[in-house]
Length: 149
Image 1: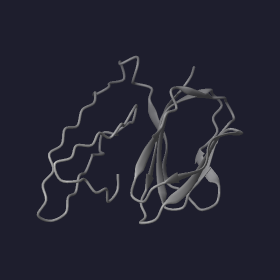
Image 2: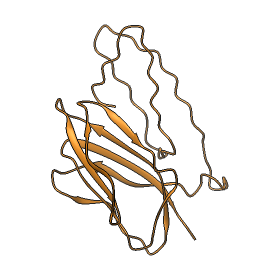
Image 3: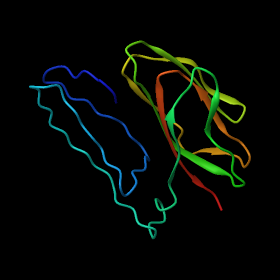
Image 4: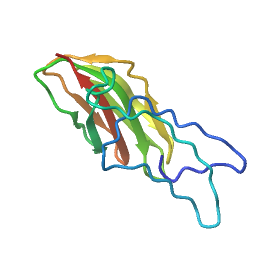
């Protein structure tokens, strides 16, 4: 979320599914001067012995360009894409296009200014050799998944 405005006495839920936070990374919350926000963050701490979570990795995270670029590079193994978050970091609406291999999963989808969306991947299989591409100037992306053995 970036420059997101919360109405007085409102509650929001940020649906972050299967996202990976590295050992030196953190969640940061900033509020406007004179304002206060209460928050609750939950998750699990996975270790290399946790069968369901130990192999979840960040596959791509960066800023998108106005022209198509690779968001997740190819691999020699099939992969499961578990989660994708897109966040507009500009004061204007932005159109986003995302392709998994040759399949468009978003085509010029408009993300409102300073809004974030969760793309429901639900364990989408990305075959070996395929990539994820996308374009959307002023949009951050964060993609997690697992390589299959």
